[in-house]
Amino acid sequence: MSQSGQKWDPKAASHRFWILAVSLVITSGMAISPALPAMQKAFAGYPSTLVNMVATIQQVPAFIVLIFSSKLAARYGIKKIVSIGMLLMGFSGIAPAILSNIWLVLLCRIIFGIGIGMTNSLAFTLINMYYEGDDQAQMLGERSAFEPVGICIINLLAGFLVNISWQASFLAYGFILLVFLGFYKVVPEYHMPKKEQKKAGKAKLSWPIIWSAVFCGSLTIGMAIVNVLTPSVVVANHMGNGTTASFIITAYTLASMLMGFLFGSFFKALRRYVLLAGLACMVVGTLMMNYATNIGILVVAVAIIGFAYPLAGTYVFNTIDNRIPKEADGLANSILLIGCNVGTAFAPAIVSFLGFFSPMGGVNPGIGLYGVLVLIMAIIIAIALVGTGVKRKVTR
Image 1: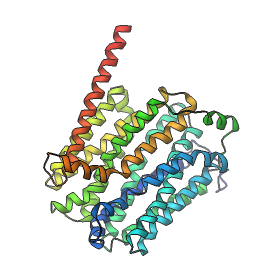
Image 2 (image 1 turned 90 degrees about the vertical axis):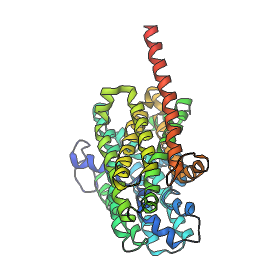
Image 3 (image 1 turned 135 degrees about the vertical axis):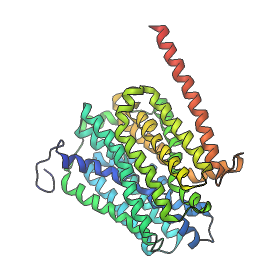
Image 4 (image 1 turned 120 degrees about the vertical axis):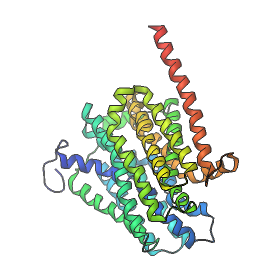
């Protein structure tokens, strides 16, 4: 039974929604990026890279806690751990609204990351527990679409509130507490059977998991580029302010949401080549963003980047279980998410580092060099896919 007293039915629309609603908040860390230009002015005595870390530092504790989240859920109950995680995110997310010290703000973001780590992989686990077959695949696709919806909501709220002050923009994270209330009221507790716990405990790390995590981490750098660096591109090119940037980032999140819902159709049409389609979007989008000089080009660029992860990243998550033992599914989800969090956390530093070596122009030439590196990766993967296809034909 759920907290509301209604009989729990995983197929009921309202109950499906609150299972999916967890994914509205798990990637909301970077949604505060519209406030970064104002924060850089407020903390002018600190390096801009440090201030930009306000939007990404939460990913570091997130990937550390991710390692233990499944064990915590098995011991204390998945609903309890997810609920605590969302509470940590909500309160630590709002806290900077009353803080004026950059180090205290960063501390709050670290606590925010702990909440993400407790919640992130369990959003997948909740679906795996209650759904199977085509229903499970549909829920996983919808889950990937819910992530950009959540980013969009908080990003727009932050964009409006930043007109008051950079501190007020953090009040946007109050949305997480609303999601917590609905989830806690509707979704019942679930304890994993001991037999399943023992099988999961025997899962081992393998090269397919490691390489998939590295790939996902590389891809999420592009996502972070949009969320973290779009405001600076907008301001540097005199396109507008933080509010303008929030609307441009919304184009990215809407594109990601749309592709999340359409992934099933693209996968049926392209199969494994959907991976290359996602990488192609990342290459074209980042190169366009690197040279964008007006709002129109920048909006198109971030929208194209928005197509990339729902295609390539979702493909990796949906097919990893074909390359590993069934009992390693939970471990694989956690490790892949760790890869994603590492890529997101260090994206500003990586792009800044690439900027020193980039021969390209633009406001932030590191973005362009990143696009070139993704192109090289796409060519290598294309050669591998074609080679595998030829080998299969020969052996038939």
